[in-house]
Amino acid sequence: MEKASEYILIAEGDYETVDEAKRALSAPFLEEFVETTGKFRFDDYDLIQVVGGISLGDLEIAEIDDFLFEISLRSSPKMLKLHKAEQLAEILRQQLVFDEIRVEPLE
Image 1 (cartoon, rainbow, N blue to C red):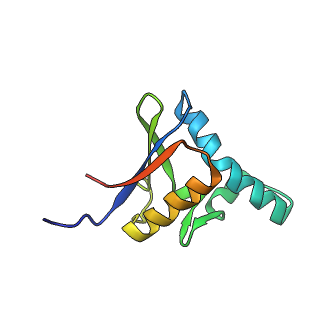
Image 2 (image 1 turned 180 degrees about the horizontal axis):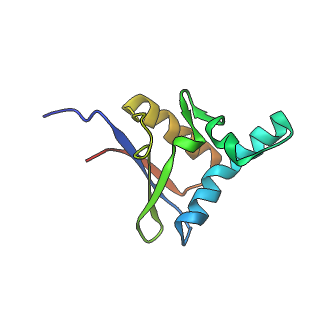
Image 3 (image 1 turned 90 degrees about the vertical axis):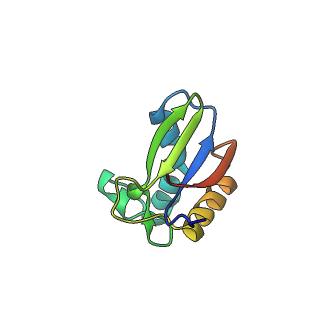
């Protein structure tokens, strides 16, 4: 059995659209950034680190079913390895943004 080299997060939450899920995902990181710096510009998404080496701008969210979303780095040149995926999942669990979050291999 070959071990996956890249992972995604599957997140379940009470969001009707991808935009709602993106706003919910981003909000805690944006609030912390504004508290720290006193300002925010759209370009700052790439400066806001969600987990070591991965910025808010690297994250992509896609709806895979009603209230079920995939969080990945598909559009980023970076790869979400298992350790970073688990760290990101734990951070999102602590923020209580989604009802359930699990890590799965990217197929």
